[in-house]
Length: 325
Image 1 (tube, rainbow, N blue to C red):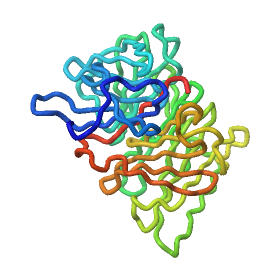
Image 2 (image 1 turned 120 degrees about the vertical axis):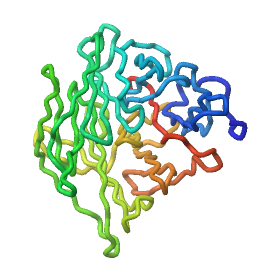
Image 3 (image 1 turned 60 degrees about the horizontal axis):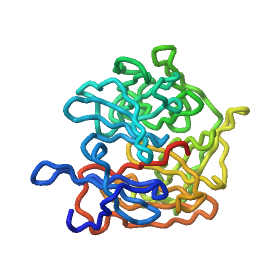
Image 4 (image 1 turned 45 degrees about the vertical axis):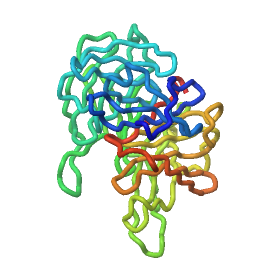
């Protein structure tokens, strides 16, 4: 890691949101990781507990830490270092390519907060209740894909007002616990018009984002079947009164953050140094490891090569947000 200028201290509160860069291990089998402030364009050191454990961030800012040997699990506030113990995970949980979500603000006493882990690769999930004694592994069934007949996955999923909502091609589903997980498809009104780009084939990829108590659906349109060529971005907000996805041309002071494993989150632009009303997206497809910044109001895109000149990554970058945004 000599080629990277990394500050010796952990990132201060004003440096968030950040991206965690994981370069694998050195010759002594020590993890090579750091955390990068997008606004400050500066690398910081990870605290020892974050460096030595598997890290699965949540859109709510809390980070799931899992010991790679004992599978002991906890939630950590990356700014205040507050920690909440969870039951140990089983050895077969996917430390990569999964998404962690919290139904409510967590407290050590639990207060009804459910923690879920959703696999990106198949229809498997794990869940526990804060204050509970164990995780439960559950295979769910929300139908099959039309393309290959395989099971659909609730990969794009967010927490919203104590429930979990997932989306597929504009359809909306809700996951509730009573006490076992119950998945229900909903059918909101939705009109999605693919942009025409000189007759080129366009791919649309949708991602859910919860922001300030509202539910949003962000569609990225890629031209010429090229996932490195984002042509347009459309944003829809769920109108629960009329049960309809309605397109919006502004997200106000908010910033949306999109990442790998269908990660979608938001924070206020105030005090973060990020540009308000913008969508920051880093998916790190094989052929595009750049950070894309889309202004929802103007439609303009800025691209930053934040990985240029860095060692090859062992895992995709993941967002870490301030808690209680």
